[in-house]
Length: 375
Ligand SMILES: Cc1ncc(COP(=O)(O)O)c(C=O)c1O
Image (cartoon, rainbow, N blue to C red; front, top):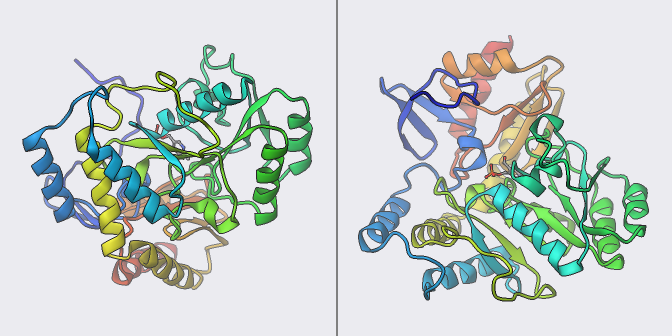
């Protein structure tokens, strides 16, 4: 049997990984400034993570959501504590798209409305309602196109209010920093206006923190810089450091009832242990502080490269914008310098999404490689 060929692949076969490095079958060492697409938060194969997951799987890997699972409560308490959002409630699922799908569905249940407002260049995943709110027609199959979504320019408060005035909008979904779209972020004034408008028009504000959450920007959530109160916060990627886990945090204004949401695998024992360990390590190793410090260092060093036109993003969710397409540069970084980086919808933007454990000496390797390629 062959694989359904949907991914253009680089010819690299990682076999093991440790902290910020991955190693291929010939033991060639690659610096991971991509984090498997912003997934690796506490570093590859962190010893505490390996130990805790191994111990849990040897006791019990899974049981369904029909029994008591204190690991879920422990995870909820730890997210509440570290995120600074202790009064929200947690629903667990398995991926980013699923988190947004549940967020949108819950918004629709809560408001009894069905239209969604999303933003141009946004990405929210590939399931039905999530992909309909994603600004990429190539990803939207006819079955998804039945959703009623209005895509608005980031920053256009007037258009948002006009759409909300019709009274049929259940949710406004937004990435505070666009990931796949290319690291654009709007002003605090805009996010505050969204917060106010959604409250005024009985609409649910969903902060998609799938990529930016769990400390990646140096704050626990990217929206926190703007001091707003989303009704639902969606999370995934960094939450499990590679173990598939997603979730939504739900403001107490939205009430639960039996059967409203549900999943077989969401919140399983292994996923809970993976995510609880991630939170413990972020706290013990002060990784949000590290994200801030290394970010400043990276930005300062990258500013010394004349070909870099703009530096976008925050924390360890960064983008270097050039005035030429970066595809060849990215290949040279992988195959000549053994450094993984990311791309985005913007062909001129190189994305930097390393594990939050990264240190200055690793940034130096990247800057040297960029300088040698661009000289
Ligand atoms: C902001 C954002 N939302 C949602 C998703 C979808 O997550 P997943 O691929 O886990 O379904 C992604 C994935 O890149 C993302 O960046």
